[in-house]
Image (cartoon, rainbow, N blue to C red; front, side, top):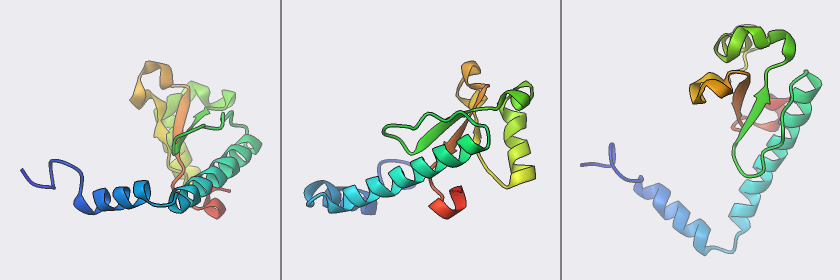
Length: 115
């Protein structure tokens, strides 16, 4: 077996050790970055008609598809977002049937891009 298909990549383990044994400054900084991204996303998508409960402890947000688009289902709606708005989301149906009224959004973009 190799690191390509088994176990965590060594540099990631070293970084995790540093973060866990450090003074917490790095962790607080990253947490604040994701909090700001979350807040911008919830506000911006809310203005666009999405219902997005603020996630408490994850880098993903779940947005309910606006009523006027819900008939498309999450897969077709996700395609529409890419084609018309250059927004990539994960269709909720990929996480089970009950997710089809939702899309999952990763908080990986900077605040300016999320707006």
